[in-house]
Image (cartoon, rainbow, N blue to C red; front, side):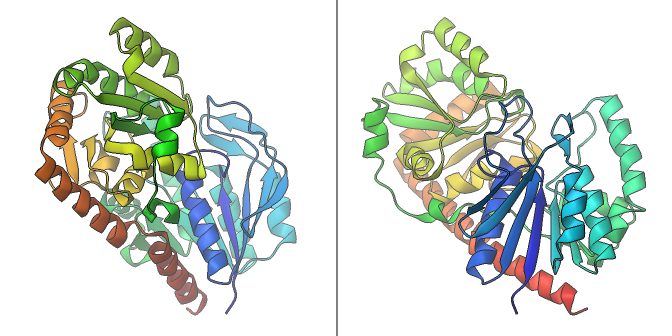
Length: 390
């Protein structure tokens, strides 16, 4: 049975970020499975990023992408009222909407119900522990959650949570357990392929170096500055080490550059900017170790991508990373902000070949079992059919 599926999301390619990446691989996998997929999104990028330069409509790998002007942008939240007219004029078997607490979810669930569509909410880990956000934001979220429990969460036929923490928060809001399913995010299929990184290494003049890689938006929450602070000690032990940052600026680029100059690391750090497709995979293929010392990171998809490449990871006990990496198995989990331990764990992986190889093989196994896009897409496709036949 061929389904007509709407994926409604605040961001989509070429926007960079976890939600945009998840929606893209799901949409393209559903096309491979023989379904019709429309992506409905805002014509904007993440907060702090330049205006998105992309057409209002285009087809990308078989997916019809509709981008509408966002009239209200508050942080990551956007409101594009053209979504209403789109859902009135287009009928779908399934409406799958992403990013809890965004207006697009309320709109999608309401019109999905009116049109007898299956309605699926994909929250993307929207909840926080005490102290992770300020009191005003916490109060605002709590107030909205009470409202959503009577509307969005009630109207949705199923809620996809990334982990047990997210599930527990939905249960706290009175949602029945049988309505919630835990589905981890996946890495792109191309992450599981093998690449020769020589062209990447030659392009950036780092051939022969041992690469410590960071991939992601350079923002305060991901703490890229900690890798810079750790690097002088790493260089003392591993003179051929080189730090590579891949990703767009999210407000921390200048800080990194100033810090690198202050620590005399300018010749030991490369900042490529955002990379896509094969170029991004070449960066992964060049790396020995992946570093992500986040203070706050709901579900960093780059960790799944690194594992798929067989790269051991050093990350923190922030809630998101700890859901993906197994400490002492495929990487290390350190306490947030602990530069000393960050440094020691990176040096240990650089020096201990036997340990490194064990972690690398475990990383690949973890990715194949838990973060394969075809596996995740088939699981969600089965969910769609089960809901349609209820």
